[in-house]
Length: 341
Image (cartoon, rainbow, N blue to C red; front, side, top):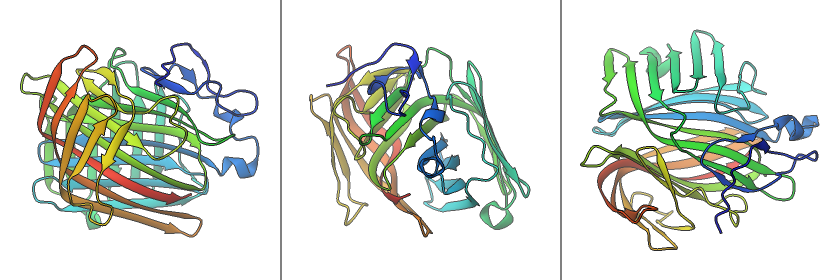
């Protein structure tokens, strides 16, 4: 069952529980997170993040501002899609000191600034602006991100209101296929972004999670031979997905919803191909990984390990209108993540 919600209203009831689980094309629900965290201990269970990724023909560049209750994590990483190299920099902040995250994905600023590092994610009605300066990145070579992602109001997303037990929930929004312009400077290398060749994506999440969590996430962004923008967002492994899944295909900003998706991969060897098929015969794609990014965090109460596999997707899917779309060499990734947080 895929329950699509369309009414405007609060996300949570007076007891801090989801009023209605399901999915939306736009973030119509008011994320009244003050009801989710009435006490100190419960506030430590509130997890919030803004994760952005920018795809160029040669690089994947990511920036995140997050607050996971016990700590804030501000991190940046670059994956060289051609040469396979990768650079990460993470700033850990006890109890999230200095992190600013708005409750609405449609407006406001997410920000952090200290010690020369400055991050601001600004949102308005038609664009999302990434303004990042990190002089310590890559051993002092530095990172500068000045990128604008086009996001007109009619651009659809996949928004999920997912129960995670009796009194826990996950409210998230994912955007794919946002044309990217601006500049990224990494050390002495400057990359000017052409919106005809560069795309961005957003993973925006707010929720109260169980301490032990596990999920799989697959994402891709690129162009079809006729110039249309195509995106893919697949996921699972967390929460009660009986009301809806986050599995969605995007073509030129239009969301095409899928039901359950099966992930076939080898957790003993993540470099083997990942095949993904849906329950209605509309999706059959395979990611052939070429780069493995492993990120581990161990901060006593917070531990996580993610294996993020970058490569190219190939296969086919069927849109809501019945169009058969073939994918060839579509850049993307798939990951498996285990967390205690």
